Amino acid sequence: METSLSGVGASGAGASGAGDHPWLASYPPGVDWAEPIPPQPVFTLLDEQAARHPKRDCVDFLDKHYSYAEMKSLSDRIAKGLQRIGLKPGMKLGLFLPNCPYFVAFYHGALKAGATLVNFNPLYAEPEIERQIADSETDFMVTLDVVQLLPKLDAVLPKCRVKSVIVCPMADQLPFPQNLVYPFVMRSARARMQVDSRHLAFKDLIDNDGAYAPVEIDCRRDVALLQYTGGTTGVPKGAMLSHANVYTNAIQAKRYFYTVDRPESKMVGVLPLFHAFAMTCVMNWTLSVGGCMILEPKFDTQKLLRLIHRKRPTSLAGVPTLFNALLSAPNLGDFDLSSLAFCISGGAALPAEMRKAFEGRTGARLIEGYGLSEASPVCCANPVHTGGKPGSIGLPFPNTVCEVVSLDDKHQLVATGEKGEICFKGPQVMLGYWKRPEATDEVIFDGRLHTGDVGHIDQDGYVFVTDRLKEMINASGFKVYPRVIEEAIYEHAAVRECAVIGVDDPYRGQTVKAFVALKAGAAVTAEELDQFLESRLSKIEKPRLYEFRADLPKSVIGKIMKKTLVDEEKARAAQIKEIET
Image (cartoon, rainbow, N blue to C red; front, side):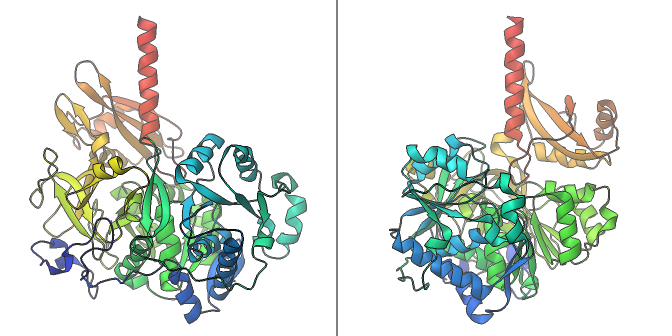
């Protein structure tokens, strides 16, 4: 096996035995954990399937279908168009797009032209857009002619380095006759493109024969993507993901999820593709197996239920709140979800009760996986053939080594079963943070990517995450892990979602506070919930404070944002202190 495929390589991984890697004994039958994955440019995922199955559906967007041949042709013309307007290898192209066919086409077309992609969250405000353009040194941007996007770019354009904004018409993605009536019915939603040297219409960009000039790509060193991370915990940083990183992660998923490697695979793409989870598990994994992406521009519970009922997808990737929203729909019984065979949950811990309820309702296998932007992003997942172990994030992906280091000495490995910080080595691990060598050195050292997550590996090789190091609560000198408390709270039948944080306490240092949202029509008091937890948690773990809310704050992918709750508590405490003084 090759010794290094990225900044943190799978060094010597294939030479070690089951004693070093206990997960080997639990691995899916027929999957060789140590089999090398020769790196390729990311766009070969699309091109190879177009050569094999040109007429097969690649994308279904609001009932308009794009074949693999059509998507490849579009990406080729984008590549040539970008080269004609001056994009050189290594220059940055920003994608300021929701889920749509343009995203898939520009993602792979820009890589063919030698660009480095930069994903921009469509919900960014103008200062965030301007800041990320400057930090990433982005020279070209792509967006839609809709009022939620184009005007924000136009506002920052006079203040930034962007040479050209490529404007794509929303109407052209729609099937007949919606494409004809959209400009009239949705007139208020359209944004008019300015006619000047810094704006370029999509139709003019692709007005060519698609014969782009091939670019020499060093898969291990050339950066395919700057994936920004850390916006909820600090200053956003661009994780430099090479072609090898991104391509390998898709092939790792293809091999590991071997039972769903079939051409009839249809994956629902409701998670945003600009997020690393959806990039790999929706877009690139689907391309690797020759399946079809059913793309939705945004999440809506009723729309998603109707989509599953009507289009019969086989796979769905989501976060726990998405699966919870489906289960909590009052008219869930009106829809047939039996086509779902394989669902993967990531982004946050999947409560055991939620998994059990979803599998019972759909018959699908719902597995929990784990990843981070710095690893393209998937590192672990429960195996499909057994479903894995409840509460576990599963087994390390092919070619991926998981190690646990001491919380007191990060250079020291702990024994199997002992708790510590979870670390990974593997070909999907980033090259480092863009222009931030000090930040890179903080998370990559001793050949390991340090995740900041606390957990352990059991004797069967399953990895368990207890909590985030930064979220760990220190109450009266005892370490308290919010995930343990949240799992117990989720066992109550009235609870729809919850989050546990530590709040300052003059006596204990920190005390435990639980934020709870109830299911529709359900009722429970703080006293009743506290009594319910009496036999499930220790005295030090039980929340001292409860707050009931209609909903909890969430990120764009639906992950509960504990930082928002922490900031609210700090602001509340500061206000009380000011009043008292």
